[in-house]
Length: 282
Image 1 (cartoon, one colour):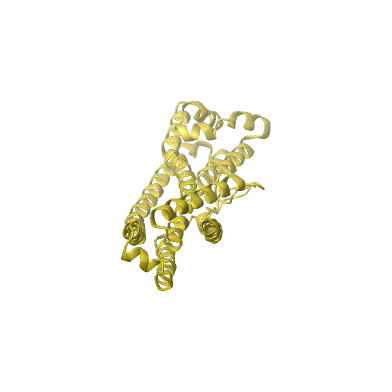
Image 2: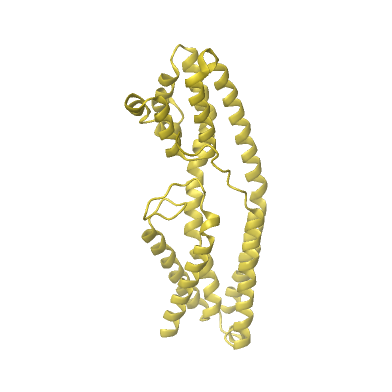
């Protein structure tokens, strides 16, 4: 029992070190952070580490119960413990993508309002009630901000709340259209909607082309360990071999090579996060 507990603790520590090393790569540079938050994620540090350590220990206990081998149980525990960060990062990426994908329709709504006689501030305020869903939430407080701070500071506040490169570009153009557009506002918004649509198509093509590579690299990483667990789940020659020092060495070397391989494959298949060129307030 002491051996299992010690192995569980060491597995959890290994997971912690691995996730810490992956922190910089997994964290989008556009995410704002508070003092207790995890960079790139929308949860506190205590919540995040509780989940990571919990799934690490639970996975280790499950596989140890199946195989009775510490080393065979450690690698699945390390892998499963990285899933909470991947899930939370993916959830945030989906939220950012939903806002980005809403901008072409939002810009067309603004353009329609302006052509029907509304001013640009009135058209922006109408997004809170009649625009695409993700933009309704983002512009919910625009009217209050605009009346108390001014139109440009209100747009700056929304830009920092959204905190993604596409929204930065769109809002900067909206600010220029408000300050200097005059009769050209309609043409500016039409060109902006078309350019934003082209940018989203390009980003979607990049994500689609990278998806197959990511799936293949993860399948190649997971399958050997599933086979190893299946072979050692029953008493016999395989379990006896991996209980020996030589079997332990084989599993450790295999685990290290697997982790190095998946890290290299992930880096090769990763797409660079677009920098926020227009981040910050005027």
